[in-house]
Length: 426
Image (cartoon, rainbow, N blue to C red):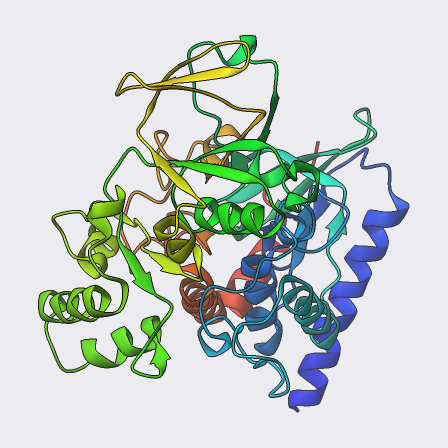
């Protein structure tokens, strides 16, 4: 019986994928299951959890590949910052042969195998321009535009909409006085691959999160002379403590002790292992690392060797930038230094408000669900969010499971109702 259900689901899935390929989208296309926007890890996790329950889905992806963020907008030396058991997607663990911290390429290979295993076939090159709930027919109208052929558009009708475009859909580029006058190279970390091209150059890295810290280390390894802008207080923790990953140790301790106690314990161990980071210009926030993450989503830096290079002077720590000139940077403390390049490790933002219309689920300010974790995964009228928890791949997996379970409850009844098509297709 389970085999027949799976076969039926696959038939429906293949049917509307064939329709998408063959049609010029002159009229709307009905999707019997959820439409998922985004083919990154979050979108794949949602599709797999739905597939396991016999529910077909359609993934719309603006790029031409799976996980385009990981494919094209990450640096070469990137590894998962957390051990693989905390980063695996639902229903399929990482191979035991992989290291504890898989490389970027190993993670991408895992995602490819994951998609193949669950027969997930996204519709690539389809950028969602608007998604809006039609109250007349109680369906979502999702309009897309071909990424490289702007005159090719499509409209999909569905009962459920899963937003999986993620926390890192668009770059954040700060407004810095004089940036247009700077004559050196300026790039965002999304365009940084390796420090090879910066050998022997003075490079200013703006932003002291995990990416900024690791880019500085990479620049050191390629004989560049990096400086790091640190404007705010930051928690730096060892990646490993007491023979365990810091994240894993934290999760274990939180089962038995209050968060503030665990924070104090982590900070004590960090001080013993790393010393007083404040003497190097890296002041710690008043709130502990776990409490800060829980309240504001600010992730602590897990040190992979950058701090040692700061201590030995190979990486300079600078205050905030006041303004730029042709080849110089003036800092807020009055110091002026020359630089050949500036790398903006200033992060990313959600782009959901730009295309999701008529829904109050997401904040216009930051593009995240208004309800904090763990309640931000479900909105009204069948809209869901996966991967907006500020808790990485583990949070996305939790969302994906909840969404699939919720849709399963109404799958048969709702699809029977929707197939009556109570609204016009044109």
